[in-house]
Image (cartoon, rainbow, N blue to C red; front, side, top):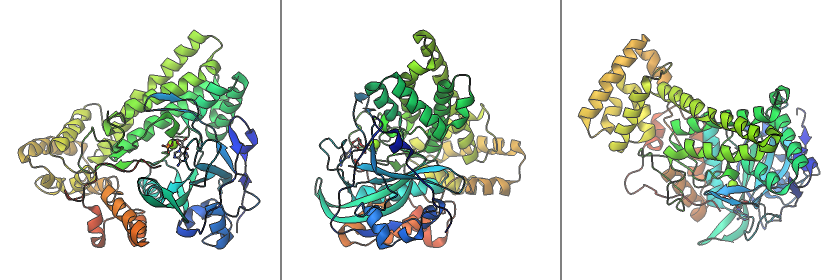
Length: 489
Ligand code: AMP
Ligand code: MG
């Protein structure tokens, strides 16, 4: 066994950033899932791999002495309304572990019982949302999207009261950290100037050490987070991913996707698609995600103002200029990614219209988002093939496809090279909502994890499509279609 390096850097900072808190024991824990590759990456001793010692650790029932659990304090804007105290109400940071490169990762239980931040909640997580987060976060990782990972999941043996009684479960999440925009909002709302500076310095050292060399480290931090989020949101959108609850407490400072709740990959393309049943206004719709990220980053910038400059007006000017970078970087990243999806090695400003027109066509024809792009490689050689079948309006498709062909030809690349690149960019398999729902139903009603395990395995190689997985690549039929996902609590 290689070395095993445990740190407690957030716990060491103490209040107001975190509070010590023990998990509440559960009745009869059993394994649901374990991620050996991630455990190996974290150099976790094998005595915790699918063993009783591991079950004790990942259920919170028997903690080894290297664990020192704390609940992290954060605030946040929820659907635009500021809540000064949220915090880890059902999550506990166990420890931070180093990988072989010295990169630090949080290991966190979610659903381990009440904490000082639980308010009226029970601190628990139902089986369904735990399986959903496990599947979707690991699929996102396989798709190359920065994300929290899933290390373990256990069923607790206790029942939770939600709309109906549901089995309780605990997921162990791994992230570069779970520090959010809301973490800064908490310190800004409750702490003093010195505490804000301590926290910003901690975050710089942990996530953006190069910023400490900048003339204005806190401005550099703001710029780095803006850039990370601009890239992340472009990536989400290029995959048809909808986070669902982009509150400021669900947006990480490291630029990883965090807090999988009512999230989903879209089936039929609709830019106004939402999945959270409470999101009546479409605040967190697919097509609003860039605007909302920018709004959230503005809230982040506000917390940093006292550190940006001693002169309030200058601080605002610096923050405003930094925030203006978001749109340009996000649009450029989205253009590049979407260009690659349609076979362009390097998309230019002129290609924006071509891409937008395809999206409009997809939306008008309710074409499946992932299938359109995956099948597009089959249309490269013959535009009546492949994606053509998804467009009821075949003449509009043909007109678009002719323009696309002209553009592809101008690139001067071999067609099979273009096709290969497209198949390596456009996933055949995404975690489809109706399949996740089916896997959860089987697990909850019959204790049958076979579909969960199958989805989990196959989603590790989302760009490969074998005959045996043809069913997983298909969009839902009208009867299988699921409008809303769970709220995740
Ligand atoms: P989320 O919607 O999961 O991002 O959570 C928003 C806030 O509600 C966070 O402060 C959570 O810790 C808290 N929360 C969500 N569910 C529960 C629960 N079952 N018990 C206690 N707190 C919860
Ligand atoms: Mg959250």
